[in-house]
Amino acid sequence: MSELVSTASPTLVRGRRGDHTPSWVIDGLLGTAVALGLALIIATSEGGTRPPDFLAYVFAFGFGALLLLRRRMPRTVLVLSVLGMFAYYALDYPPVGVAIPIVAALFSTTEAGLMVWSVGVSIVVFAVSMFYRVLDGGEAIGFLLGYESVSNIALFAAAIALGYGVRARRTQAIQQAEIMKLTEAQLAREAELQVQRERERLSRDLHDIVGHSMSVISLQAGVASEAICSDDRAASEALDRIRTTSTRSLGELRSMVRILRSPTDHQETRRVQSLAAVQDLVDAAKGAGIEVDVAINIDSSDLSDTVDVAAYRVLQEAITNIVRHAGATHAQVKADIHEGQLFLVITDNGRGSTVDDRPSGYGIAGMTERARLLGGSLTARSIVHDGFTVEAIIPARLP
Image (cartoon, rainbow, N blue to C red; front, side, top):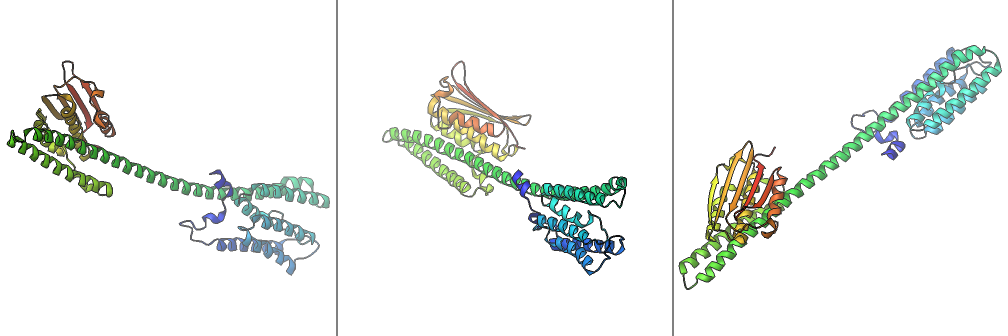
């Protein structure tokens, strides 16, 4: 950023929005003002051994014409202005002061970021002027130091300060534009990260759907295999469950793939299962020989869509773990909302295993991360007298 500040040219901002005046018009008006001002001073000034003639006014309009180049060659304009002023006085024309002919050039040089040149030239001009004024001896030293020097220094300082102020404001505008550009880029990156996070959540959903469905299909396939020839009705029911589960899973997978292919199509999200589909999970568990008591005292409308889907996935993962690893015969599901928080508890009477004894892909870690991303928490622990509990606390509605 410092390099940008130190090398910024006035031409960089000529095309800014809201800047409707071409630079050459501004330079032309400034040059005209300087030329007319000097011509008026020459016409009304007294002194010098040579009366004002055509050449004197050529000097005046020359100083003004130089300002048309002030943006492209500020140093050259300043040097030529100083040399022109010295030449004017060398011809002994009526005095016009030493500040007026070069004040606009000093302003332009400072505006271009050449502060050293502006200050250095001011010092040189002031020193040379005072030297020759004292050498001529036409005016008292007190007058020169107390009046003439103060007025010249004030004009030099005003021109430099004004040029510095204009440059500072222009540099600030460039910096603000750069900051805005960086801010927009940062917002775009954050939006991309948000999309990526959402797609990661959807990938977890894909894992949950496949993991749960394949577990149920595997169990039912085993039941069907054992029941063939000995219990055709049980085999038929198991095959029906396999067909139902696989069909439903394929439908969910298609919905999720459509979401992943079109991340901006949020209308597809509601096609993913929610707590309203808890009975499907219960039926699947019962098909595996596990009785499930359900006490869900909420409605899907009480939850944000994302929370609803996440709650279903936590419940699905917990029941899948029970079916796969717990060796349980009974499970209980409770869900309620209290003070804006969804409380979801799943318990079973299976082996009192540790969390690590019940792996399932993302498993407990996946459920915990899902709850954390929504501003909640999840704990999983063994019950003292056998069994296992998964408890999730998630804000019911996201801000």
